[in-house]
Image 1 (tube, one colour):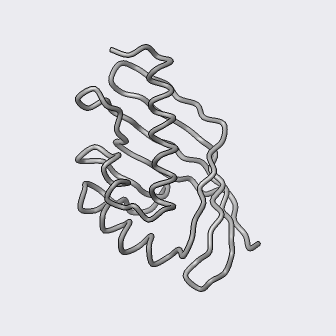
Image 2: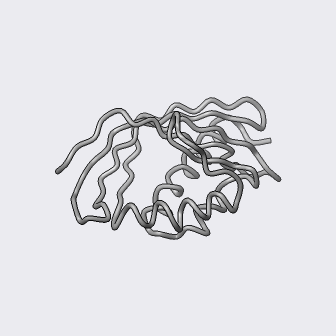
Amino acid sequence: MASSVEDYLEISQLKHEYCYLIDDHEYDAWVSLYTEDGSFGRAGDDRAEGVEGLQYFANQIFDEMYEQTAHLLMNPVINVAGDEATGRWYVLLMYTDSEGEQRWMQGRYEDEFERVDGEWKLSAATVVPLASGSL
């Protein structure tokens, strides 16, 4: 089993890769960061669940909402307990929407992770929007 420092770094790397992959429209690779029954959603909204739900979200919903995105993560807090972990990050999302308008959203990610066959995976990613506006 890896040390807590190694776990922290692996989970942090996973979340940063998550941001690059969704921003670069590499949706299959983005989905591969999740457990088989993983889920994504905004706090209080419906969730995309499982591989098919996550693929549908990325390819149909996310891709239609945004022309371009840049996820910026700050202030990670990662807690590891054996083969499970939680993580919180502030996120600043700079984006161009489907109408071509440049906008921003500030919020928080509240995530859950599981170690599967020695590799950390997202089991649940939740975004909590806090503020947004136009550029």
